Every structure is written in structure tokens, then in C-alpha cells.
Image (cartoon, rainbow over all chains, first blue to last red; front, side, top):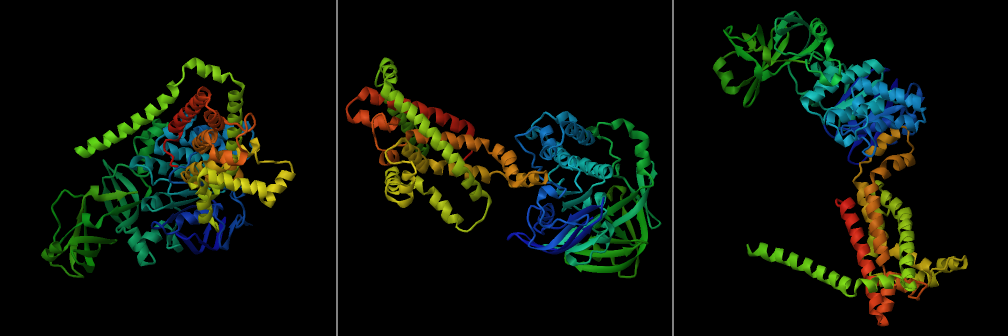
Length: 373
Length: 258
């Protein structure tokens, strides 16, 4: 277990104030917060890059506050990869084992294992600068994981990648976490990574940890305005999937929401980089049904009406207006249809509708408006 | 339109002027005379002494200016900005003045005399040539390496340290190999400037024939006693060395600022 006790660090531009945090063995903790909130300096302090000004850090009961980085059993992966450009891919992955003076047999074995897991064995003889961003990040992760660290620190590991690559690598991170059982602390500002990866989330702002909890707690019950604004997501629900022809149905507290999403987590069809795309069919079907997922609907994608709408939209619910908030150009309306929805209307649309708090209304939205992750 | 024509004209005329000056030196004496003077004992001595002292002063720069450049690029410390300015000072200083200063230091100051007592005599010796070249050219190495180190993210070292390296190993296994272009460029510049250094060398080491006679000194001595063929031959050698080092610099260190 990693225990951080009241750690403070002042680097001038970035500060850490009285941070306390516990991370259990094998846990996947995501630290989320706006730019400049001190996320990176927190993990660099855990890695021992900086000595903390105050406070103490323990790893598995051993105090490591003043320990040098190489004796901490903590590895680090940065957003911009930091692969050593003068070494080949294989030499990069073997770098740490060589510093540790591992035998060449052991180096070969561990490098081969990690490379296979990440699908980069064919890149061994290439130079880092000839690789794509996704490949470079896989090499950086392999370079860290061969050290079998007790804690692996990831500093926005997916932020520099394009959408599809990011999605793929995100799944791979989860797999690595399962295979190696390493404790992972992952820094990001992307809330989707929180839902798909985190066991727990810590929210940071201005050098402090402002909330720690499960992803659901953080997004459903943010404990301060900053978090609510930062996460900025309404209408997030946790539910269980079942399948309808060509669609996915999510049951949330007895309410059935239909989504046109074609993929959930690892149900994505083109997994070229994994190297084993042939076990698809049955597995995928299995993975689409009976899984716990999160679904979200953007407030502006929901239509509100006084009578049921005749339309092709798959989702239509009847509920009661709980609250109306006037935000100038836009009006926010909270409607309880068994679960609480927030709907965003233009002022003009709202004035034409003529409804008040307590009135009964209908909510309608398309299956394509339901985002699953 | 006229602006374009005049500025392009200026650059072309300037380039042509430099070319003419170089060609005049190179074509002054026929190749046979150049080859014959290469065989003279005096010029062979000058070539050997120049090569040796320039290599020695370049190594000295690597050993001292590279660590200093690393500190200036990586750490914050008291007196850093003063050190930065002072370390660049020899660049702005006329080499003759630097030479006078060195002469006073090694000739009259206490540490200078102690060194001489201990057998390290710098005044009017080849050792003085090395020190004079080092003093005047160290800023080139420093500037090249400072900007090279500044261009390498310290995060490479952070990663190396979490991968089992000590601070020194991270520098040795990661940062220095990544700085290899800068090291090569800095060495070539320092070396070729060292070969051409005259003013400071003249002041500290003197111009003794067959003793402290480097290539520039030889050019000066031969010119002043009217041995034009020998003087021009030495000038030709110096031009060739400059051309080669300019080529290496452009090839490997194109992106570095001085």
C-alpha cells in the first residue's frame, strides 16, 4: 500500500499543499484535475524526482520520503513518451533491467513477455522516432512494466494520442493492470478515462486533493462547485446492458435506455494492433450483454414536450419537472422520470412550452444520443 | 521591388568578395611551392604543434565547460546569472587583452608562481598555448553545450532514474548520448578556433621559432621577414582546416544557436 501523509512541495510555478492519500495494492487510482492543479508534481514526488518539503511517503510500510528514485520500485510513463532516441526499441525496454544488472537471459525473457503483451515485438529493431504515437507509448509502458514496479505512475499517458489509438491503448492499460496486478496511479484531465479505468478517483485543484471516491460518487455527488464545473457532465447513469437487434439496451433503476452505440469497452471490431482478432464473434456478443456500463446523454440532445411525441426516437419517458433554472440564453430543467435527467432548452423554446415546476412532461431522445463507456 | 534587388545584390556581392579573398590566397603560389613548403621542418613543426595544442585545449574545454554548461542549463543556484555573464566574457574580450591577463596571472600572481614552482610553466611555453586557447575558446563550447542541454527535457533523466540509474548514470547513459551532436559541434568549433588562435597565444606563449610556433604564429613570423611563399602556404592550410570544420558544423549542428 502507498500512503502519502501531508506532503507539501513548492516548485514556484506548481505547488502541492498538504496532500494525503492512500492507494491500496493493485488498485487503479485516477487523479483528475485542471491544468496546473499539481497532478504531475504529485506523481513526480511519489517517484522521488523531487524531495517533498514536508510530509512523509510510505510504500508497503517502508518510509521512502528520502529514498532515491531507483530504490523506490516506482516507474513512470509520461504523456510525451520520453523514449531514449539513441537506443533501439528493444534497448529502451531493456534499459531498466540492464541498470539493475539482470542476466541477459532474464532480460530477454522479460522484454519478450512485455513486448508480446503490448503487441510491439515486431518493432524491436526500430528507432523510437520512426514509431507512431501509440506505438511509442506502448514501448514506454513496456519499459516501465518490465521493472515489475510496485507502483506505476502514468502522467496523461493517452492525451497525445488520436481517438481510436487512445481507445485501444485504454483497453490495453486495463489488461496490463489485470495481468501484472500493479498498483497504477494515472493522471488525466479526461473524464472518460476515469470511468473506463478507475477503481477510485482523486480530484485535485490548486495543489490540493479536494475529493476522493469511486467514479460514480465523484460525478454524481461532486462535493464542490469546482468539481461540478470541471467534470461538467450531466445525465450519467450506471446500468446493466442487454441486447436488442442492432442496439444496446441499458437498464438503469428499472428504466430501459436504448443506445445505438456499437461498442462498449472492448467490443470494438477492428483490433488490428492486438494481433489476435480471430476470437471475435461469441466473445463480443458475451461482452455486450449483462455488463455494467455508464451511459450519458447530453442535456441539449433531449427534447421536452407536454404530450408524447410521435417520432422515430427510441427513448421516450414520462416524468415530473423538479426544478427550472434560468441561465440567460439557456434554461436548465431537471425532470424526474424515475431517474433524474437534466434538459437544456433555449430561452425561446422554453417560453413557447409553458410548463412550470411540478408539471408532467415527456422526454424524448434518439438512441444515437446515448453515449456508453 | 528595388528593396529585393538591392538586398539580394548586397548578399551576392558580399559572398563574391569573400570568395575572391579566399581564392587570392589559395592561388597565390603554384601547388609545387605549397607542397615544397609542407616538407619544410618549420612548417611541419607548426602543423604538429597546432594540432596537438588544439586537441589538448579542446579536451580541456570538454572536461570543464561541459559540466559547467550542464549546471547552467539544469540547476538554479546563487550567482547563476553572474556566472553566465562572466563565462561568456572572453567572447567579447579582445584576445590580446585576454593574453595580457593570462600573462599577469601566470607570471606574477601567487597561484601562477606556485604552479611554476611545481613545474607547470605557462609563460613562453607550449603549455601556455593550450591555456590561452582554452581561455579564449571555452565560451564556444559552453554556449553550444548549454543550448544543447537546455533542449533536452530533464524528464529523460527522471525516467532513467526510476529505471535504476543514479544521477550520474542518468547523465552518462541518457543525456550525454542525446547531446552527442552538440558535443561534436562544440568540439569542432573549439578545435578549429584553437588552431586559428593568435592574439592570446602571442601574449602568453610568445612567438619563438620552433618552440611556440603554431600555424598563425608561423604565418606572422614568415610574413614579417618577407618569406611570402611560406606565409601563404600556412594561410592555405588554415583555410582548409576552416572549410572542413565549417562543413562539419553545418552538417551536424545546424539547429544550434551560438
